[in-house]
Image (cartoon, rainbow, N blue to C red; front, side, top):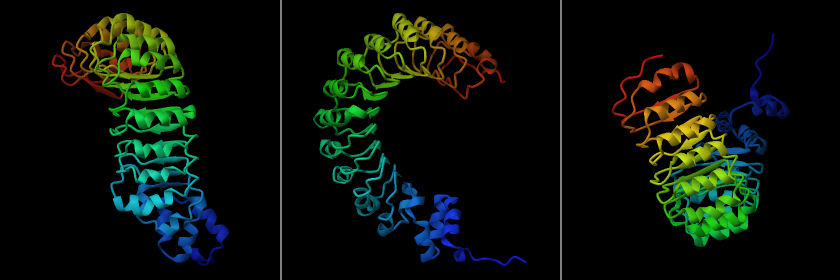
Length: 370
């Protein structure tokens, strides 16, 4: 007869094998049972990743033991107590970190000092925080950084951003600076000079014109993901530049422009960038004939948003549905002349389709059921 054995009586090497199979939340629960299991469960080997959910129950002295931590995620953390008194003293000394996400977590210039010594960082996501040029100056020594996101950091200006790009841009592959409304062509030119390995770039287009982007696009031939938000001054000249210099493009967003969407530009885009799979030209003057020409070659499209493109007709939508059989998500909000007729075929021709939005298309009646 096999006797019951208490878990705590097992040899540590056996316990170690068992604990390796536990989820981090289970490790947390077990660590709270006694001092013995607290010591075992907080072995650095188990804690290479840590999220905000865990931080409230982790004492400072325990955090300091996590010498192998490589990934830290406390995005959307709204607790100033955790940020200022608990995490950042630890963060500034945890040099094994390669990934940190502190998006929308009330980070400010003072707490940005904790990043200055994290020289092994590859990914840093700082979206939606109250940081200025003073705060981002702490990033100047992060030479191995490959992914930097500062989206929605509205206090950042060219004065702070251009030195950052000059110092760390050489290895950057992803840069998100959309809704950084004070950035101008100075930052774009710095990107063109120092960040030519970028494969993904998101920018705010509100203060930019075609001539501001011309040189940069010619230098960023590796781009696969290019997003321009609020490009009200951008025209088809930029589309032509993209088609000429970015043949590997897979994702393009250029919204809110009254000068984008001509037949010639769309034909060139489709021909030169046949691997596009995500395209957002919502609230532009995309011509119906332009859409037809585009999808003759851009047949790999999976996600499209042509909402509020008032020039689109049923023939354009029919061409989209007929040529692009990998479509997964279609947004055609607010297209007044559209009816349900082109959609009769989608149940058979688009097996991957998961989302279709034709709200505020007044002439569309209920589509037939599969």
